[in-house]
Length: 333
Image 1 (tube, helix red, strand yellow):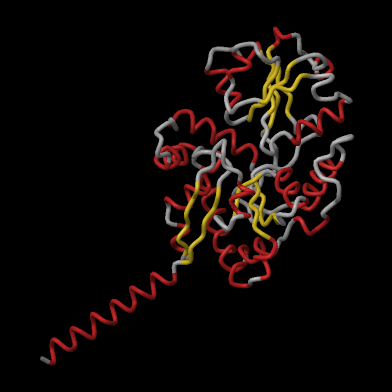
Image 2 (cartoon, rainbow, N blue to C red):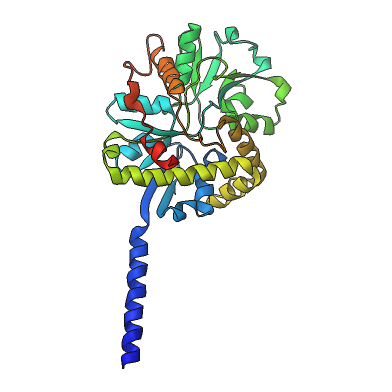
């Protein structure tokens, strides 16, 4: 009887400990900007290698897609943090969804306009009268700013084709140029059989029209909650470890991404190449500064967004309210 009592107490202690462990796992939901691919390898690596779990986090990674707006998801309290481009985030802030950047893993832009040489485009001076493919849903802002800088009015001086998330308009000669990312769509064009020597590319970064992409954003009100800040600091710490690993080992990152894609469309060779190109956008990988938003880069993006001619992306400078280093600093301690 006494033995069974001791066993019962031991079992109760074990169950209580298990219950405490379950409670200790804080839940975090992150909404990605697009479908599972190496663009988000750091998050998948952190999950696969147990970095989130080691920080006491139960992280749900929600894939994005053409019909998913990270802004709408977080505004509806369906995510704690979202991956988004700064133009869309600051436009949303001005429209009443007060997003704040808490980390910036990508410190360079991967956006480019890819053109066929046989379309007659050799320099940006040749855009006039041409059809240019542009992504919308918040991705059009850098393009509109660039056209403003060139003195070209969309649908007057250039025809804007609302581009789907594919490269068909270029392959089928429906557009002289299309929007591509250095790590994704550009290589889809090449894989489709168009030689690189038959293409002309314009990097937004080099054209002075680049804005920051793939930052991590939370709602401003949440940053007043110390527990939330502490939780997100753990999330950043684990995420940065995941990104450092992904940059260091593109093949391992590709395998993790392929395993995380339920559709089966992610292919190993493609994801490895994508990760190698994504790595070019993360200058601070492997250093204590990984994920740190440089104020100068933020201010440069704001300036780009304010200077869109008659249709600026944002009308007021959000100043320092648009970002916070509090979570990053807590993560780095």
